[in-house]
Image 1 (tube, rainbow, N blue to C red):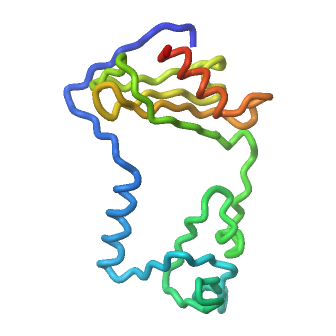
Image 2 (tube, helix red, strand yellow):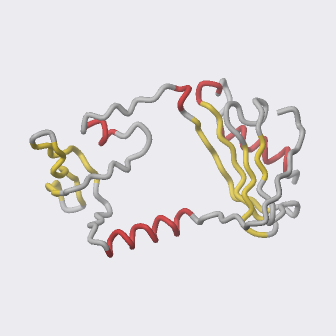
Amino acid sequence: PDGRAVSLRNKRKGIILDRGKYEEFLLQRAIRKGVTYASGTTVRDLIIEDGVVRGVLAQTESGQRRISCSIMIAADGIESQIARKAGIDTMLSKADLVSCYQYRIRHESIDAESIHIFVGKSIAPGAYAWVFPKSRGEANVGLGMNVSLRGDISPKELCKQFIADSFPG
């Protein structure tokens, strides 16, 4: 936070995943294992019998239908409404939430060999900012901020300011 830099060298290479490709890989692997994937489907409610989730009521492109399952994965995001319908308390306090924003930028000063992490209330209140290189001159640059420390500024505006300060022009 006071502006000092700490460099850590590691002889091993780091890997930054392409999240979209990784998720597609996981999806295809799950389908090969027998998972049914229903694109364009919205779960409206759970079918619960004897305290166990047995399926879902879903809205599909062709109308509402019942879909049975032996395992239900509630992947509907933070404070999951589906998990809540199953009786799981998903409410979080503002102190437990970090809101993030990220851009992919190009700038001649980006080093493909170094990851940079920045901390401090003036940069990213309650979290950190990052520069994750994708290649020489290109990186994912973003920051997170604790929602309870947000004040009047959004993560998007703070991220834009961080980029302007770190990568002039």
